[in-house]
Length: 156
Image 1 (cartoon, helix red, strand yellow):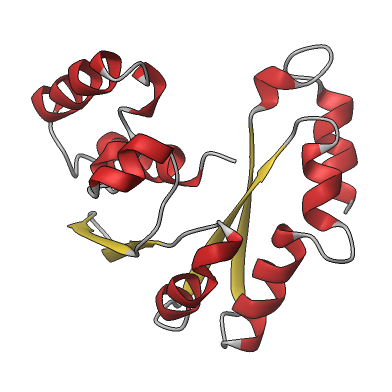
Image 2: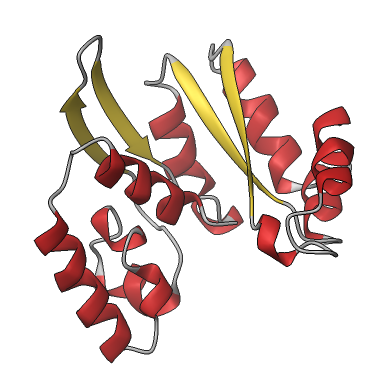
């Protein structure tokens, strides 16, 4: 759903990583045929993560804003690495739940046994009471960036 990419982009936009480093990741990602992964690679350091395009281990990134001292914990979304996700989430004050807007993809995530639903419930159970929901992949809606699709997801 783009969790690591969104997180890496946020770190870059907040000044937590410089443009030269992002350009280096972009070049390396393109060489592997994964050009769109440049921001994900801010946090996904393992060779297996980069090759498979999934987060396996939790990754920490710290930076400061004018008001806050921020520690970002990027946790895996893949079902096989749920223990690592729990480890990361148990340390959080706030969580960002990234959901994919694509038709079918969002519905699968919030279904009875969906991962999105499971992750939200786990975060709540682990004591995370502040949850930000980011709707990603809006370019894959029909039509692209559909306001009605966004509103439909928001209602859930």
